[in-house]
Image (cartoon, rainbow, N blue to C red):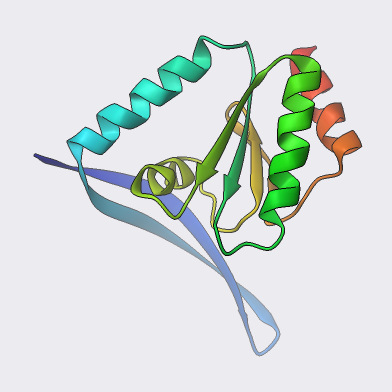
Length: 134
């Protein structure tokens, strides 16, 4: 059985030095089994801590191992959840679309993306986690 997911997205580009922003809707036909597996993983992560650091990676991304290492170290320091999301997999693509992640590495803390296509320093990520924890 298949379902359709629809996500709003903004695409920014330049042409002849002028910026153009396109508002689009991404429609994706996916297998319902993937959706069920995704929600099972999310539920399990929610049981591990009040906060989750999610690092969106791709196998061919040269900066992703460093972002993943920093994310894991900060998660361990603050005793919060950690997830690596490989956007090269169908499940990772679903998660990436939900966060509107279009580049790697990207880092989210719970439902807020704090870095897109860049590696935060360990200190910067720690600062963001402290802000979220209150």
